[in-house]
Structures are given as C-alpha cells and as structure tokens.
Image 1 (cartoon, rainbow, N blue to C red):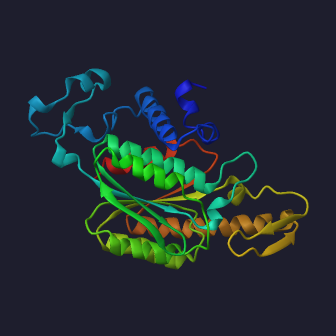
Image 2 (cartoon, rainbow, N blue to C red; image 1 turned 180 degrees about the horizontal axis):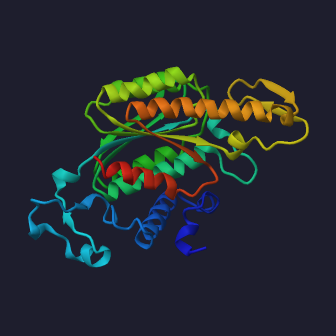
Image 3 (cartoon, one colour; image 1 turned 60 degrees about the vertical axis):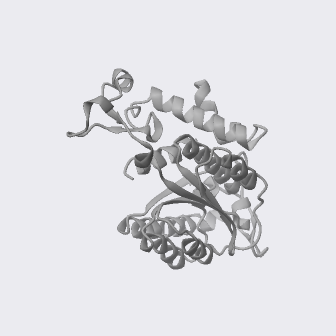
Length: 297
C-alpha cells in the first residue's frame, strides 16, 4: 500500500495520538491521492480554482495548474470561494457501536469530521460544529479564522456518545439556529423514524441550505454476519434479545436495504446528497463526495 493511503485507513488513523494529527494526515493523504489519481483535474488546488469558461479573462488562468493537468483553470478570488459550512455529528449512544476489528461509528465520524474541518480551513471557508443526541448540545457558529480549528477539533475529541437518539428534533433545532445560507454536512447512523428524519433534512432545504448526509454504519449492521446464539443489546435502551442470527439474516438485511433506500430516494428527490459510509472504508470516499458537492456551489 502506498504510504499516503495508510492515513486514509480508519484502523491506522485510530492509532495516532492527537486529533489534530489525525485530521492533518488524513487530508494530506487524501490530497496526495488526488494528485496521483485520474480525478486530479478538479479541486486539486482546493477551492482556489475553477475551470475556465468562455469570457473569463486570460490573465487569470493558472498556467502551473495547466502544465500539471493539461486543463485550463482560473484563479478565484476571496468572495468567490467563501463558503459557510456546519458539520453536525450524531453523538447518541448507538454511535458507540463497533464490531470486531473496526472503530466505532462515532470515532469514524469524528475523524472524518475533523479532516473535513481541516480541509475547509485550508480552503479559507468558514466552518462550524454541531453535536447532538436527543437534542442539540453544542453549536459553534461558522468562522474562517485559522485558529478556530483548534476549538473545533478539541470539542470533537472530548465528546463521548451518550443518551438516546433524537435526530429529527435536534436537526430541526439546528436548522433554526443557522442564520445564513450555507452547507450542512451531517454524520449519523440515522437510527430514528425515517419520516421524521427526512422532514428534518427537508427543513434545511426549506432554509435554502445545501445538505450532504453521511449515514455511517458498521459493516455488521449491513452484512449481519453473526453465527451461533447471540445476545443483542440495545445501546440506548439496554433492552436485550437472545436469538439465532441465521434465522433473521435475510429478513434483517431486507429491512436495512429498505430503510436506506427510503431515505436515499427521498433525499434524491429534494436535491440532498445522501451517502452510506461503512466504518471499514477509507476516508477518501466521503471526502471525494464533499469535493464533488463543493465544486457545484
């Protein structure tokens, strides 16, 4: 494996000491990969460039980027690149779940959110943070000052998942809290009533915000590869159930697919970007989704 790809692997990043180091190395690994991949023609220079369009002044073409990509890009100015982004992380108890050899859903979301915040700051965009479970607990408004990243990362790092899920209620509170239009990026397992979750996501669109929703799931929550007699315990209610997983596997997987597809379908209809991310997947998948969205704003 190339060295840069090591720092896109959740198991490797989890072993690093500080969240600042985790965020920086994930972003550096991601950007190195962009330079080496077929996708390097877009957003290599973050939000500082956009593709040349007829009518743009030739003096603004970046010839260094042209030499590297064989494509014309023009330099953008501060007012063209400024974006306001809120990163929202579900910290309810279900986010603590981690199957063998995987990090928890909260850890995965935290490292990815930290990397995204770091990336936004490098783009000179304004970034803020929201943490929620049954209600909105933490809200740091978007700012672009470079020193602000330390407060965001510290807040993410000291948070531990607790309490029950209240995704719909919390996201509605957040939608009312955000004053100016911007981008809202949400990391959650969305284990809540799908209709209420969808209504909350629509609330952001009603307020004219762009939305990227990442449903973060453990591989076992998708594949359900358990064997023998297993005792399942609800992480939010502490209720238990002893059962034979093989008898439930087909029914369970059908229900999970239906649940995901319901949210995905309605998000698509309302121009909300919805992505399922497994905690065993490299971080660059989600970061590519962000850059793709960022290029359209």
